[in-house]
Image (spheres, rainbow, N blue to C red):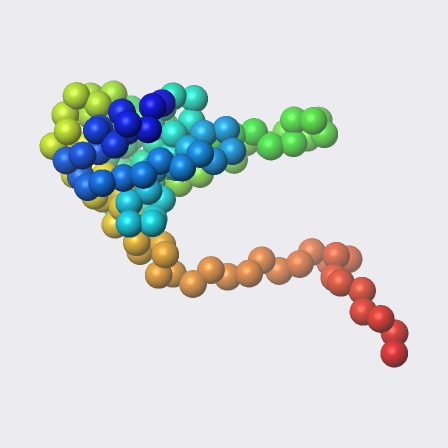
Amino acid sequence: MDPEFIRDLFAQFRPVTVRRMFSGAGIFADGLMFGLIVDGAIHLKVDESNIADFEREGSRPFSYTRGKSSGRSTRHALPYWRLPDRLYDDPDELAVWAARSFAIAERKKLVPRTRAKRKPGRQKLRKAE
C-alpha cells in the first residue's frame, strides 16, 4: 500500500507514519505502532477492550507460519486484526477505531515486559576459575 494513501486514510485520526518492516509495514502515531500492513491489508492492534468489535465485523487476526523450512511449521497470531472493509470508506468511524488501537498501544507500552526464562540446558556456560 502506498504510504500517502495510508496517511490520507488516517487523516481524521491524526498524522501517521508508515515504516517498512519485514514483509509489510507498521503504522505509527507519535512513535507508537498501532497498525500493521501485510499483503495489502491493514490490521489494527487489539486487546480484550476492542476485539469483540472486530469479531462482530467478521474480521480475523493476523497470523503467520513459522518453521516452514524445518518441516515443523506452526501458526502464530499477533494482536492485530484486519480492518473491516467498510471503514476504508468511513474516515470518521475509522478514526474512532484507530484511536482505540492507539490507546491499546499506549497501555501496552506502560506494561513492563517480563523476560522469558531460559530453557533447561540453554544456560550460558561460565568459565571455570
